[in-house]
Image (cartoon, rainbow, N blue to C red; front, side):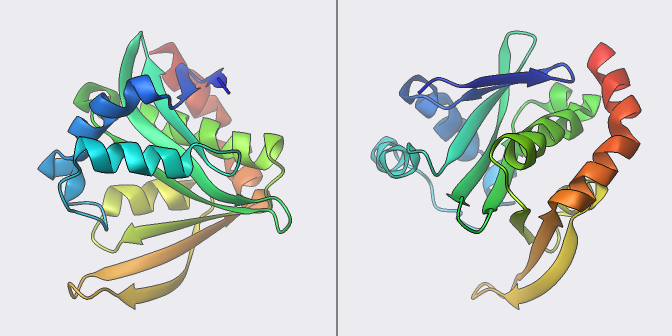
Length: 184
């Protein structure tokens, strides 16, 4: 099922098989992989198997587009409509896009889709403790640290949760800034 959402100068288009190789190449970049929990090199076969597992109505993986170019991947996965929860995640490979501040715009669109279209009440996130940029982005939209866990690698993994109410309050506050970023 093709799904496209656009707002604040970005477009989220549901991940398709045609996107897999580009996403895999960027995901394997050490600058990105080192900020992830799973750090093994992803082969084309692994990428295909992963896509087969996540290409369903309970997972929304979107390629983020800006100005006719792919700039990253954002998702809401493990959507549980019965209890209104999902887990969010992102990674961006385009340095110009990251520097523009539009990562905030893409995050807002993704979370707004989750809360307003899917009817979620809570979005969860797992972030490595030293990934300050991701933590800042999560807290801007109302995310709160609820727990931490030490991984076998001795790294600290933080668990965040964002409620619908906290997100909508933050969105209302930041909407003028998002609209201004969309112009740039």
